[in-house]
Length: 113
Length: 114
Image 1 (cartoon, rainbow over the protein chains, first blue to last red):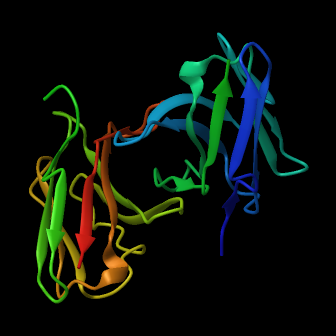
Image 2 (tube, helix red, strand yellow; image 1 turned 120 degrees about the vertical axis):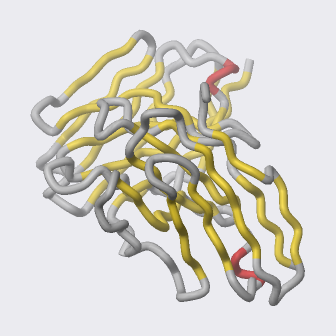
């Protein structure tokens, strides 16, 4: 049972435009969500997170939006840059009982000039 | 160390052989996690160590898989009688009890079973 889903395996965006990556989850008990970025041959690196008590968190070019009623979160990158080309994973957890993260299957973002 | 270190970075083994993968977490990190990523798939949880608590082994796919951790330091993931479906990148991560930044991952061990 895939509790965290990223239904778009890939996304292609022109440099300077907005990239929107989506993630859906099924477990309403999740209370913390994170986005990781992964380059080839490297481990994933933390990008941005959001607690379930918020609906938006912003860090520079990156903003994560959380819609609890829809069990949906999205990552916005504005403006997109070629260096953003990577695989993006969303992850979720129920912090009150565990630190174990459940990851989605990833979305490969390509930013072209 | 400065980051999470995994060894070897690449391992090719014959089907049926045992393999041992090593992870050196960041010093002071009490939690250690193993995940794997098979080709074209997401990150699959395997096992989680937290201090002296019993590990959460709920993600281990079969009894051929086992992992040990010595105190709050090195961990080894052992796969016995490897099968071709075990081919994947095995990722180790560590963290403090909890931070808002989740985990720090190593670069992984790419295991190929031939």
